[in-house]
Length: 129
Image (cartoon, rainbow, N blue to C red):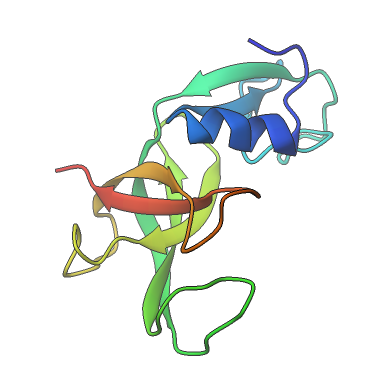
């Protein structure tokens, strides 16, 4: 387990199917990593493995294609509250979840898109029911 979780090491773990986050002394979870706790501002953060499971708290449909994010449109972007705390933004896997609803159980998957062989993998959510 790394002493300091950086954005690069966060995605390196993701390539291996592992979700890592940071936990402060008060038990708040920050993910993806940053220099301080997103709740209390503490800089005393410990790297923690997370389950990658959570529930959809909000979602929207994206209709505009971006060359930096090579997905066919429309796709659904969701904000997921993780079981341990903290939240992540990612894409709903439409082959796994055909009817996106608030509070649906999901789990995270990291995926390289298209022809990308380098760079950070993208965050996707699949059904966990």
